[in-house]
Amino acid sequence: MAEQSTPSDVSQQLDRINTTQPHTARIWNYWLGGKDHYPVDQAAGDQIRQLHPGIGDYAQADRLFLGRAVRYLVADCGIRQFLDIGTGLPTADNTHEVAQRLAPESRIVYVDNDPLVLVHARALLASTPEGKTDYLDEDLRNVDVILEHAAKTLDFSEPVALILLGVVIFLEDHAEACGIVSRLMDALPSGSHLVLSHTIKDPAMPDVDAAVAFWNEHGTPKLTQRTPGQVTRFFEGLELLDPGVVSCNRWRPETGVTGMPDEVAMFGGVARKP
Image (cartoon, rainbow, N blue to C red; front, side, top):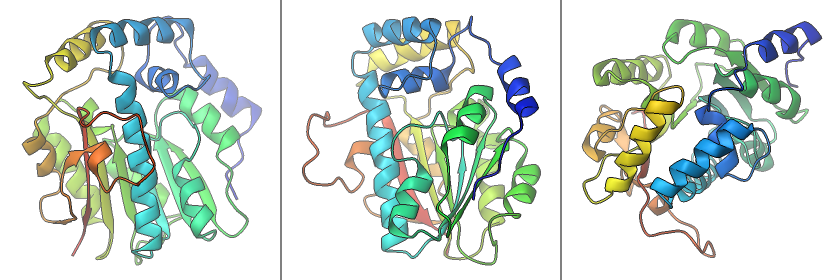
C-alpha cells in the first residue's frame, strides 16, 4: 500500500509551490494534456511550442518509452522492483500502473523534489494490495539518502530497475551527472537495469536549442542539453540493449502507434548490469 500523507505534510508542500514562475514538471504535464499546471506554465509551454512546434511530441515519446521499457522489464526480464527518480506529475500509465498491471506484486519507489509532484503523488499513486508504492521528497544529488529510503521498500539483493527519465538534464556538470548515475547503479545487484532519457543537442534540430534557451531564461530548474554520445556515456559499464541510445520513439516501437514524428530530440536507452 502507499504511504499516507497528513494534512500538515500537504500544507507544507503547498507552501513551497511557486505559481509565479513556470516549472518544468508542470509544463510537461500541460504538454501531456494533464490538468496539474498553472496559467504561467501554460503560457511558457505555448511560447516554447512556438519556438519548437514539435516539443509536445517529446513529452509523448518519452511517456510511451517509459511504458514500453517497463513492460519489457517486467514481462521479459522478470523485474519486480523499480526506483523511479524524477517522477514528474502523475498522469496515465505511471510506472507502478504499468508494472503492477502485469505483476501486481511489483514494488516501486518514486523520488522527486517538486512540491506539486509530491502532493499529487501521495494522492494519486496508489499501489495494488500485493505490491507496494513509496515516495520520497529528495534531490537526485542526495544518493545516499535516496538509497537508504528506497531500501525500506526495495530488496537490494534482487534486481532493481533504475528509471531516470528527463532528470539528469538538470545536472549541468557532466562528470557529476555520470558519477551520480554510477553510484546509484553500483548499489544495485547484477541483473538490475538502467532506463534513462535525455534531451539532446543536434545541429539538425536548431529549434531545440532555441526552446531550451528560452526555458533557461524564464523557467526553473535550468536544463542542460547533451549530445547522443554524451548520453551514451551514462550507460558505460552496462550491457546496452538493442537498439542502443536512440530517439525515444525508436526504442522498440509498438505497432499501431501513429502520429509520431520519425525523430525527436529526446533520446533514451535501456541497459543491464552484468
